[in-house]
Length: 454
Ligand SMILES: Cc1ncc(COP(=O)(O)O)c(C=O)c1O
Image (cartoon, rainbow, N blue to C red; front, top):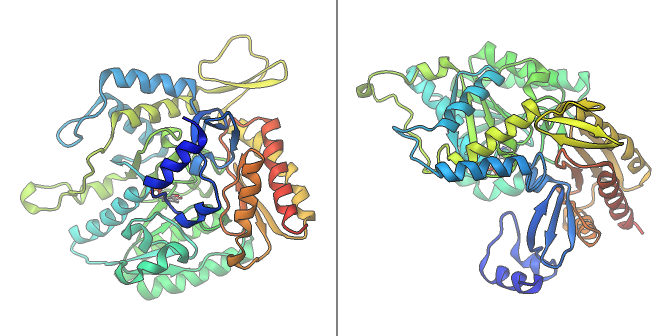
């Protein structure tokens, strides 16, 4: 098939996510035939650098040889099995690994990020109910995003997605965030949070946060100290803390999990996206024995958590997740004749090797050095970075002008996928991106932003 044919059939039948479909009267939909490394390729051989990791999911490149091989092997054995009353080897291995890595005790599986959010808020509410307390509200942060299902939207704060549905959402109280990562702003925000906790804590089951970076909330960033302060408030007022690491988990912020930087343990931790290396839909809610034990009793007491999804703990998704963890555990970046290659089995004659997180640090430093030039553009307000997440915020163009979309179009014409968030252009590439590809990604964004004022 040719690009034009796919595009035509697509627009005849498909309704795409997060899209005003009428935009496609002027904006071509991009048909992708294959993915390799950081590249997506269409049916006529045009390639695009996937600088947003296909909505923040991909970690080790498209069509990663190691992950592919593990999914193929799993496919020969078991594609799926009901996860109520039955279990399977991959799930047992993955749950043990995740608990050992994070210090949690129990894993509840689902198949996407929003479902994990629904599960955590239901579980928290249900926990209190099992303890004879009805706490029907939740705290969440200003500018937060936790997904698109009704519960997840209720604890989110991005008006563009939420406002339309306000009449049907569950009760939520928003806590202001610090303006930036500074100590002064952090303390101010924590004081405001304390006032809100004092007033409402009796009716609130949990506070849900995106630790360190609010990705869909225009890549706003805050300090680990803010997270630590919120954990302390939750302890003081007996409220659960839910850490939504769906976007920031698995090395995106510099550590394997963002909560590590604050030195805290939440009551629930949510993982998805990078969990399968960007291959298959899977999510987990990690929690403690303390939570679990409130549901553990004779059936007749009717306290069980009866939530379920058909594809819970799908073995193919779990094979991809175990392969992804293998890469974190055993993967080494090896320098050979000036080129860096990621190998899962370590080799004897290596010149120099780095772990995935060490290599990411090197990559993020390179990105940071090279985006300094954006500061000289008159239409750039701020640049910021946390680990492998880098954002360039343009000036406050009125949203109706859709300047981000213009940069997106410029990117596509020049072989780079730069999906904006309003006036924010950001880079969240697969970890295997090489220097020459970073240069192209950054230069394209730079020229695209510069062209807006030409
Ligand atoms: C922090 C966060 N939570 C939850 C979600 C929802 O995940 P999903 O799109 O898989 O439902 C997202 C998606 O971008 C997210 O960034």
